[in-house]
Length: 131
Image (tube, rainbow, N blue to C red):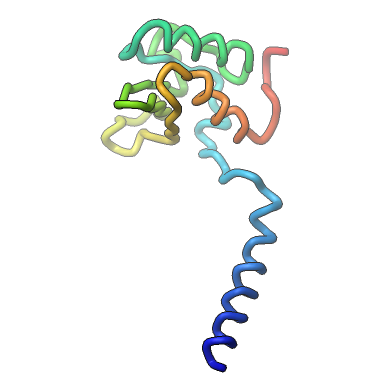
């Protein structure tokens, strides 16, 4: 009898927590990403990966991709793993070793556009600049 009561209480608790979670699909992004205007892409992977990511970022229009680290608000970095491509976004104003990492995601190798899509679908609104 006590086990049944515990089970019911646990179920009620889970259901009461589940409702607020359905109102927002994804965890909120760090405000550093949301407020950023420019992004620099580090060149540590094959150019074809960067080209695809660049085209995806350019068509989205959320960030201006810049060619200098000094002009950037964010730094986008890709790293190859065995079967995954890891994408990390850093706050350019901070040292990556001191907490500069603000977001990370992985996608299949050769699908860098999927990493950008993961970021894009978490943004609270459409692009602030380019149509």
